[in-house]
Image 1: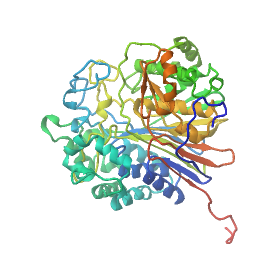
Image 2: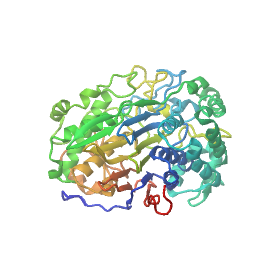
Image 3: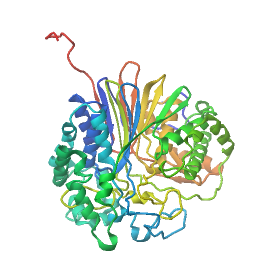
Image 4: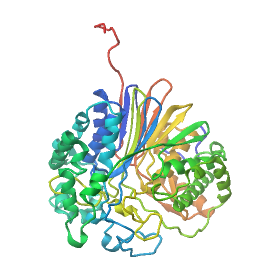
Length: 556
């Protein structure tokens, strides 16, 4: 347990794994196995990450797909950091008045008439995942793309076992999913959600993956699969969507420069806007640097109050300026400066208390994350999604493709910073983070969880640096979240409810805050350790051993 003497005790559900030749951690065993297979076959971290993500589009159909979006953070063996922005964009036919809002309530202002921004063809934005994965694999990978996609094809053809996690997600949205006969034929058996332990085979999707294997991303971005997607989007009369073949042909993944911020002798590296994490994780840690977190101890009411205040301030600033930098001026240098943090400390309250209820930024909690490292110093921390569970909750006939519902993340009201605009990238809280010590990797991590992602990543970093937790403890430790009005506490913090309420906070119990975090730590001896938490089907595979010693039998 932490060296600083935790006030709250907890027990880890899972165990880490270590190796010197590479580590793969994903939120599904099929994804982890696919990545490990590619590492063992001579691929690098980028090859393995793309293989894992493609496999997850098969075995985690509720969380991620080629018709979604996300952010990958790469550290290359030469020490460069590259962020691949594959976030979805609004189609050209959309605009600020595309959807009709139905409520001004702060909790429901993003609701629209007939849920057209949430379910069905009108909810689909221009997908970016496949473009981003192909870009990074072609530019920074080592193996042919045909090899990297092969594990996903095999899983789709042969099938995979339905986990309780997958079963639960089908049951949660059964009413919506039953309305589309194509997706229902995959997810239901005799009218009921596919049973735990049953086998799910995705033959149509295997054929789509084979087309990607042959034609690469152009199969989607203007080719036969793209046309099938556009044709399905155009059906439904008044419920038809907006995605066009021209939108697909014009989409580009973007390489962006990472944001670096110092914290107690470490360097925190994260993605820039449209992602919020690089800016606001740095901002929160800058503020916390003015406090003796270790001395306050993990899990005390005072520490949780401090964390909640820092998160509140970060969300106040995020509400003021966040999103696509081509449309919104995000003051990155200001928010990440030490001087701004010093001023922000004056906004910290000594006690909790009622605040005006802010408009709650919406982002789906249903995402996936992979963390991969290879023996040569390559690292990938990548968060990708189709936004909501099963995206727009339909499947393109004959393809197995489940489109995103990313239009749900835009503000449906005109004149807002997050209003719909053609070509605008969706804002995101994704936090694929890498932390350095003396210029060398110390750990990499990330998680799903919507707006709770980057505050959860910050808490894990504090657990590691300030509280001296092991990697496994840091990813499994109880979390909190606040949007500024109330505090959500995971069950591990339940005993602190009374103390926080006595400090003026409104406390709500939460089954979990954010999703399944996974991480890799890097030892000075070259040993890499992977960890995954209890909140998802997280699985770690580490590779040891290696090739024969030079000259062991045959002199090279």
